[in-house]
Structure formats: C-alpha cells, structure tokens
Length: 113
Image (cartoon, rainbow, N blue to C red; front, side, top):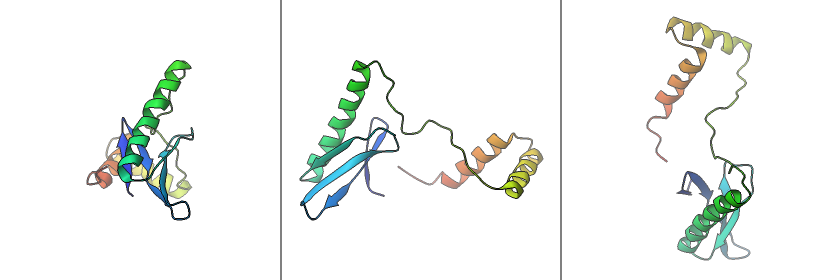
C-alpha cells in the first residue's frame, strides 16, 4: 500500500477523479484527520501539517494524542488452535505471548515500511 509516513503516523494517498484532486487520512487511529492536495508534493505537505496540527491541538487540550499502534492487540483463533499454540510455546519454554511474538517477528522481518 502506498502511504506517507511522518512522526510515527501513516497517511493514505487517494484520488477523486470526479473532483480531480488527491486526498487522504491519517491511518490506524480513531481520530479522523483528513488532508488534500493537487499534487503529490502538496498532499504530502498537507499530511505533515495535519500531523503537526493534530499533535499541537492535543498538546493545547492537554490530551494524549492517539498512537497508531499501541503494541498489543486481541485475536480470535479458536479453542483448538489456542490449545496447540499453548502446547507449542511450552515446548519452547516460552509464554504464549513470547511464542506468538517470535512467530510474528520471524514472518514479518522482511517487511519494510
């Protein structure tokens, strides 16, 4: 996926053929922050300004800005797979959390942002 990255935030790059413009939103946070531009350079500048404005607004309101990724997530894998994962983690002498973290880490290590 093509996206911008700035100060730990990612932003989408989208087009509107009807309006003949580029637009996007900051991804992976619950606050809605949009930006637009006529060129990729304008879009990227507006994205960065939107991130800066968002952080400044949160600071002015004495509010913690939403983080794109907090480092934890819940998954539903079913009882059988859960049991197998617990058994496998025990074989390695690891907690289920550490085992899953290692498996994911090995799988995504070649992925570059």
